[in-house]
Image (cartoon, rainbow over the protein chains, first blue to last red):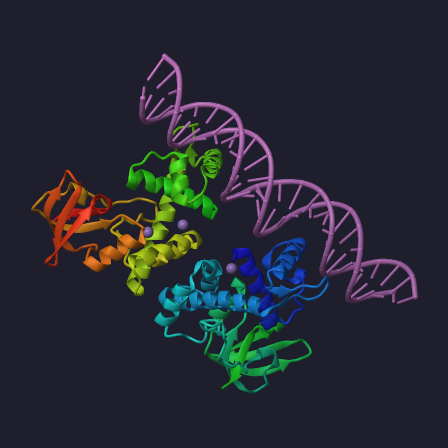
Length: 218
Length: 218
DNA sequence: AATTAAATTTAAGTATACTTAAATATTTTT
DNA sequence: AAAAATATTTAAGTATACTTAAATTTAATT
Ligand SMILES: [Mn+2]
Ligand SMILES: [Mn+2]
Ligand SMILES: [Mn+2]
Ligand SMILES: [Mn+2]
């Protein structure tokens, strides 16, 4: 399957799982930086290949085969991220950028080699789960977004759900990384902002960030 | 530049450097598994991009820009081969197969990371030189093919110039690998065959193989 | 030197993955 | 419930990278 198809089914998968948006062609088009017309065309083509269900004006739905393909690409993406992060001195943004390309040119054979080398990790450096060889995610995630965290409680960062360079730069600068401990000192619910302390520093985060930072109770 | 273009200039480069064949479109077509017509089309297109010189019915000649592009792809190919060979338990054929794909989706940034990790190696596991960041090959190669080796002399294998699985399988089976010592015990020049001993075993090699196994005097 | 064989080029056509612009349907607002 | 705004689809067209078949040129053979 082509790069275009792999990116398309992956975008649908991520849109469903992570962003909970309506998965209509326009949404996917925006994510992939292509026109709505191109997304509609592709949706029809993939429907004919039984990778998804397409009905005019309705949300796209991956079939089992489509989901399997998406998970296979996601597996390679996250394995590369884990691998590059471990071996080289690369940032969360850099590993994502490279993985976005390498994921399409990686054989199952090589993916398994990488996985074995790393000890078959269950999570990538962003805290995202890595599907196994059969496209299954066996871990359960009970983490919540910082926007839903409780005032006064201590948490461990479990997931940084983004691919934006500025966000990752901000995180790196402030010690916000997978596994680090924070305390939610105040929830400004009216203004949708969250105050946290980390390493004795106090930081005020707005909705854009608190929605994509996930945590578990410490 | 596209995968098709990168593979095309690389094929010309390898054809010139390694095989010493006439680099007409038909030759490249055969290497790449495309039709002669497609190769001619591509040659014209690349000429318009100043990557090569094309004159009807004449051999193709890479320009400086074309050579630089080819060397950049070759660098990534050989770095991947060296990297995969070192980290994972993969054969000469397997590393080549994966590198053939990864070479096109590797940023200069990542190539430099891989190179640094390996200690900026000058040769890949086949004994082929790895161009540096500026596309320069600084090592000199004085090795000769086994078909030109002298009877009775001892040699060290310096290069296995192939990408054929069967050849590599044969080499692996018989201890023919980069750096290993052999003795040329007999040259059957009329029949173009060469007898060698390696690890007390005697092997008779035909032309197909002696032309692509390169050695240096021990 | 002429004939034949082989290689190369040209011509015409296809699949993929896009584009913009127009038409149509859906959703939101009044 | 209409009107307006928004989103989606259809239509028409483009660039890339290929294909096969026919025409042409070059190279080899007699
Ligand atoms: Mn990522
Ligand atoms: Mn991608
Ligand atoms: Mn190789
Ligand atoms: Mn390649």
